[in-house]
Amino acid sequence: MPYELIAVLMFSSMMLMLFSGQRVFGAIGCVAAVSAMLLWGDHGGYDLGFSAAMKLMKWYPLLTLPMFIFMGYILSESKIADDLYRMFHVWMGGLRGGLAVGTIGLMVLISAMNGLSVAGMAIGATIALPELLKRNYDKRMVTGVIQAGSSLGILVPPSVVLVLYAMIARQPVGQLWLAGVLPGLMMALMFVIYIVIRCRINPSLGPVLDEEERNIPHAEKVKLLTAGLLPVAIFAVMMVPFVKGWTSLVESSAIGALAALVAAILKGRMSKEVFENSVRQTLAISCMFMWIILAALAFGAVFDGLGAVKAIEGLFTDRLGWSPWTILILMQLSFIVMGTFLDDTAMLVIVAPLYVPLVHSLGFDLIWYGILYTITTQIAYMTPPFGYNLFLMRAMAPPEITLRDIYTSILPFVMIMILALALVMFFPQIATWLPGVVYGN
Image (tube, rainbow, N blue to C red; front, side, top):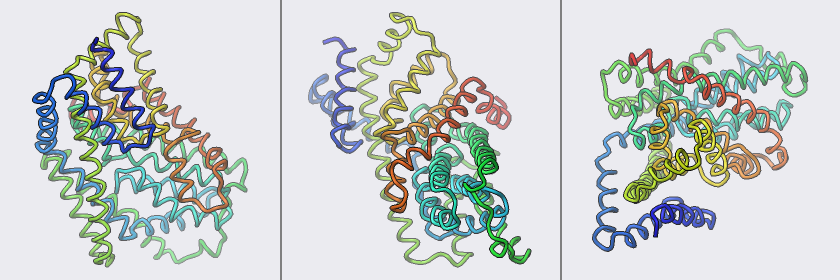
């Protein structure tokens, strides 16, 4: 049987198992194990899985994942996010759509505390959504704001997904994090501009807060402002030594986790319940990531053994004669399709063994492509009819917000994200300028 056909059968079998509702790591790992056994027999098949496990255990940067996840959950469980929203509530309430703008700011700071988009969605839906609805904000506007804001979680550093991409693509994590800063802030600014313009045209979408609600002593407003500086300080304590070369990535992640723990203790928010919940969630998420990575390594090893990447590259470039840009755009479209039923991590580990070498062979920068990947997957997350974030919002939203409202609310923000993707795609310096300045590339 031709190797190309074997590769197609492997990929289609994996997709079929995923569509049937199997867990991601189970589907990937099962196809990898069965294919290895059929291709190389007992000894070769066993060796492949064992080698993948050993490679995972020797991945020293993998220690950053539980550190960053723990940091995020400590700050979330200790209700520091509540302080942040209170700050935006007071400072932005006098602007039409100000609380929606403040919610975007909250999401940016949450992203700097926890590099998972699901965490931003949960915090936005539980803290911001009830407050916005209570103050007569348009339900479709605020639903779209929270979903769009949560998309910044895997783009603004420290992004857990970019750490995984760095491991798989063998690229420096620090450069990837810096590459995500300007695109993430640009996208947040584009969301803010849209909200302000839309609320100026139709003030009923985001009314100004009542005077008595905004009329608090100036000293208290300044005190609230310091709440927003806390995650920035933690981010600086963690990132500056790493960027300066004083600490390694793992050491910086440990500093960030320790700084979050100390901040929660100093604010009197650390309790046995907060600590236990944070540890449990960290363990659960970390184990999920490790199982998926282990399965992906085994799957990628089979693909490499078959020479599938070179075969597909030859098909696209030699036989079909497609240009590199055509192939790249088709890759991004495939992410949008897969995003209807997979999360960002699953998409990465499934296609990375195929896409990353292909992107490199086509002459594109892998740091830049990592940012394209993160933006595209977040678009996929929010694209009807089966976007992952749409159903998360449906599960967290109150009954008066229907699935139709959720679908309608996200369309303007998806268009903004597509525009941001196009800007980064055609002006790569948006992603590559800051890493080049810091690292001198």
